Structures are given as C-alpha cells and as structure tokens.
Amino acid sequence: MTTLSPPPPPSFNPLKLAPKSLIPPKPASASEPDPSITETPTPGPNPTPSPTTLLHLAFNQDHTCFSAATDSGFRVYTCDPFRRVHSDPAGPRGGVGFVQMLFHCHYFAIFGGGPDPFCPPNKVMIYDDRQSRCVSELLFRSEVKSVRLRRDRIVVVVLHKIFVYDFNALKLLDSIVTVENPKGLCEVSHNSGPAVLACPGLHQGQIRVEHYGSKRTKFITAHRSALACFALTHDGQFLATASSKGTLVRVFNTLDGTLLQEVRRGADKAEIYSLAFSSTAQWLAVSSDKGTVHVFSVKVDSGSLGNDGSCGTSEISGSNSSGISSLSYIKAVLPRYFSSEWSVAKFRLQEGVQYIVAFGHQKNTVIIVGMDGSFYRCQFDPVNGGEMIQLEYSNFLKAE
Image 1 (cartoon, rainbow, N blue to C red):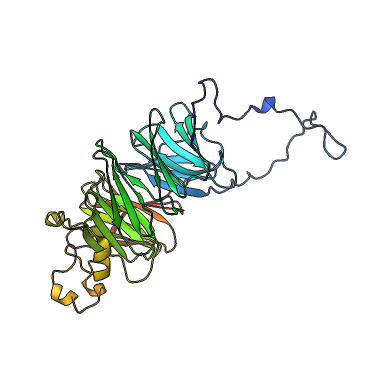
Image 2: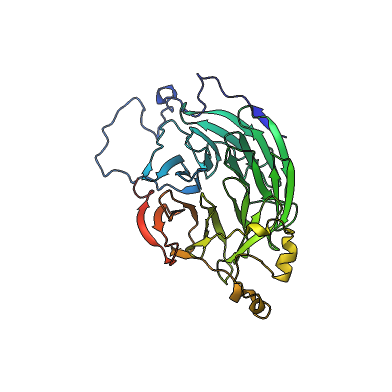
C-alpha cells in the first residue's frame, strides 16, 4: 500500500543539518584534551577529498540535460554546451541512488542509495530545486527500482509492480502487476498528448503497453529471453527492445504490436545498457558492455502496420518483412546472421563501462555519458556510415 505524505511547511527543511553551535561538546576525559582549550593546528598539506562515486545517470526527456546521482547528492549538466548547471549547497545530504529530471523544470524525483543514503530506498522524494527542499514523498513497502516523470504523471517501479500517479495531486491512477523487474524497466511517452506506458508483462520477454488515451492495453511478445532494455519514441508510437542475449534489437508499433524492423548489434552475447530514438524516430542508438555505441537507421514500413503483430510467430519462423535484405530466397537457406541489418555507424569506447546514449540537438550527433564520468559528443555520417568522429570529450568527475 502506498503512503502519500503532504509536503512539509515552508519553514521546515528536512534536508538541512543542525548548526554546529547547537551540537553539545563531548565531555573531556583523562584520555582526551579539554574541549575548552584551543590549540593551534600544525600546518600541513591539504587533505585529499574523497572521490565521488556515481550511482546513477539519466538524461532528461528531451535529451538536453543529464543528471548524475552520487554518494554525496546529485548534479545536473547541460549537453550543449556541456557544463554543470546544478550546484545547490542545500541539496540532499547523503547518497542519492537515483535521480530523474523533469525536462528543464526545477522538479526532480530522487531516492536514496549508496553506503550513506539520504533517505530509505523505499521512499521517492519530489525535490524542488527552486525551494531547495523536498515538497512531497511517496512511501512504499518495498525498495523502489526506478521512477519516470511526465508533466502530468509520476511512475514508480518496484520489483513486481508499477504505480502511476497524478503529478499534482499525487493521486494513484493505476497499478500494474509485472514479472520480476529488478532493473526497474519502464518507459513513458513525453509528448503533451495522452500517455503511453511500456513495462514488462507477466511473462519473460513480454512487454505490456498501456495507451491511456484510448484505454487500450497491448501485450507484445518481444523476445524469448528476459528483457534487458527498451525505449519509446517521444509520442509512444514505436518501441525498441533488446533481450538479455543482446544480439538483436527489435522495433514494434505499439498500437497493434507489429514487428516493424529487426537489427543486429553483433554475434556475441552482450548486455545492452541503453536504447534511444532520435527526435524524428529516424535513428536508433544502442550501447552495450562491448564498449561500442551503434547507430541504426529506423525503416518504418507503413504498409506493415495492418499486419498481425504476433512477434512470437515471427521469432520462431525467423521471418521479418522490413528492415532486412530483400533477398528473401537467400534468407530461406542461409542463417539469419547473414541476412541481418547492421548498424550505419559505431563508436568505440572502454569495454565494460556502462554508458547511456542520446541524440544531440546538433545534426547527426550522439551524446554518450559513462559511469566513469566521461562525456562524449560524436558525429556520424548518415550516408557513408562507418566510425563516428569524436567532437568533444570531458570527464565531469575529474573536472570537479
């Protein structure tokens, strides 16, 4: 059951620490010096500050900013130009395990994490950066896995359930039971129209899509193995999915579940970290633990939108009418590997580091942010493809 707590009164800030003058001194003992005696400290080198540990990274909804949750609060950076914009000294004191920014607004959804969390991991706080305080909170019986924000919705993900709230009134609008979801997989559309929500279904590899405008629910059997990652276009019309196997990425129409395209990241098993559509849904970026970011051309065949959307049949038979070579007679005798569609462009990174990706606002650019504190801006050639060109690099952890 979810507990909704009203925001604290303006005069109370639960995040601010008590002044040192209000902390009583420890009593002196035989083994300790008298606290009333002031000694002049011996000059010495400045102590080395403790390194900051990143706990979570996320882009905002239009990919113009990204937020970084750390073991000592959270930070916000703009992507173009790249710079830090959030430095609130009265912000959360302690580890922030997750942060989600709402567009360019001053609201953030956060919950605790790390060895010294600022709040329990089963509590979601809505933090108002303008007021430097948490204005409301949502309390759950189990640990929160992730949160998604729209201007009118707050979506909270726990291990076996998803809760949808009205943003302003914090009224519970919907609750969805899912298969075990330790990664907190869930996506929502960001356009101003009716919300579209995608989340794991009740079976492995299945995705449930809620169209709240038309009050329709669509189940898509996207993969045989467990889901690793998925992404929605801004309007929620198209869905990209990847499984724990990590070799194929599939694109679906969310209205009828039609499989529109299947692309191949590689032949070896990989963990997919991030999927992202461009704003026009023309391109799809994929990052994995292999140390590469791939960009695929999204080819949506409007003639296939009326077909039966049973991906289970498509996956078993190996047929796919769009996005793969038109030499269908070869596909009948050769393995699917040889008839797969490969990426247009790619960029090589450090293997094993978790990276998230998004498309930049400059033409044909990709933004890559890593859990090692790295920031990359790269450009790809939409015609000739090949290796992307690195335009910018920075390490935002070392810079601070």
